[in-house]
Image 1 (cartoon, one colour):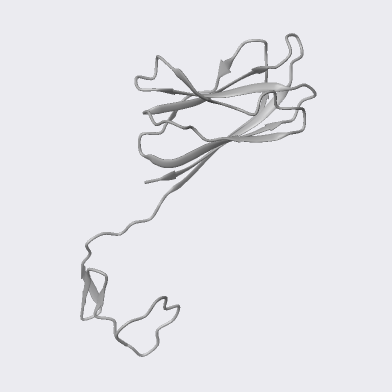
Image 2 (image 1 turned 90 degrees about the vertical axis):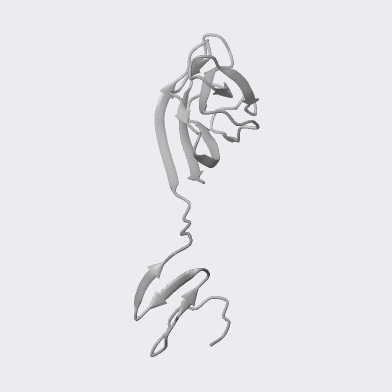
Length: 143
């Protein structure tokens, strides 16, 4: 076998090298690199909204390649959402706003447009005095 795309099962055969890895007498002795993206999921459920933007705790996104916020409005009233980014974890910049106002029973996904070390989601009731409830799921892939 001199070349193959994907091999799912190899019986009674010998592999002597795999893309920069050296195999000697059945032992893997040298590997140039092994790459596997990690997956992170963090759910925050049953979050009550108020009249002011309130941030969730920030996610450290410095080692993440792709990340997004899934928002489900489980309450009876519309909500506003925005993603904020920061280099120092203290001073935040509004990076991307959600599909505001997000109606009751609706879903939105916000993907930040810019990169900084910290990223968080902030939320508020779209109508003053008309609280709602949201579920937020942060999903990310490592680099």
